[in-house]
Amino acid sequence: MQEIIGTNVERHHQNFLQVIQSYYQLTKPRIILLLLITTAAGMWVAAKGQVDPLLLLVTISGGALSAASANTINCLYDSDIDYIMERTRWRPLPSGRIKPRDALLFAIVLASLSFTLLTVFANLLAALLAMSGIVFYVLIYTHWLKRHSTQNIVIGGAAGAIPPLVGWAAVTGDLSWGAWILFLIIFLWTPPHFWALAMMIRDDYAAVGVPMLPVVKGDETTARQIWLYTLLLLPVTLLLVYPLHAAGAVYAGIAIFLGAIFAKKAWQLSHNAGDRVVAKSLFKFSILYLMLLCAGLVVDSLPMTHHFTTAFAEHIQMIVSLVPALQ
Image (cartoon, rainbow, N blue to C red; front, side, top):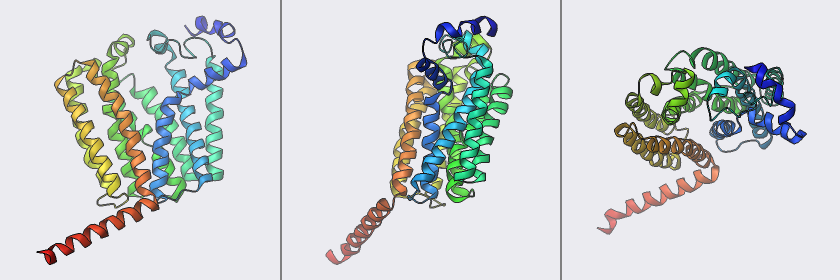
């Protein structure tokens, strides 16, 4: 198949800009954006709201390069099934716009640049964590789990949970409990997010023999699992508030509000497992949920927020203390 579709590369690329666009698409930029948001959240919490701008730029750039490398290798490995599925048929590799050899070289260059950048300007731990993300995503998820286990998303989710560790390590040079809670949040968020998507495109996965949970166990079982992981996720998000005290009241309020909406949508799906509109609603909200949760962490970590919440708490305490005197 690769030989057949690979002969059309020259016909597809009319100019250099189209070549750049094809390589850009190969990296799955929309996925990278979400990973970088979690990286930034890890940095802000670790730095208590005072992140060095240069370190932020370097870490985000290094993280983007490592994620792009992993996604490129994933596209290379899955080009055979991408050619069969309608929604992925026109990606750069299955459409023949990029040759497999060129994609592999591109991935190696990206990984090398990421490791060098993070090692020189951040630290070795951050660089090694970024490389471990590539290895885990390619070998454990893409090569081993994706085509052989219904738990592919669950275990493979560890790869997507590494970016906040990279961000935390870049700031502190180590990994404390706060970093691992961020890891756990992403890890538990991943199954509801991807299983909702898998329910939407179950037929595509079935056509190429990928044993996603909806394909093997059905929508009802998948919806129950989504509900279960959602229930596990919500209290974990609050561990950053107590007992770790890595986040405060602003983040707690945001986490509870977003969690309530997430739980409602997961509950609705558990009672309407065959409704792809409900699954799509949950999938889309799961993206917004993670983005806003990370934004909440960033805002909560800012010194200005700490001053405001402290002043507000003191004001409330003063009012409460005056109540007996008024009586």
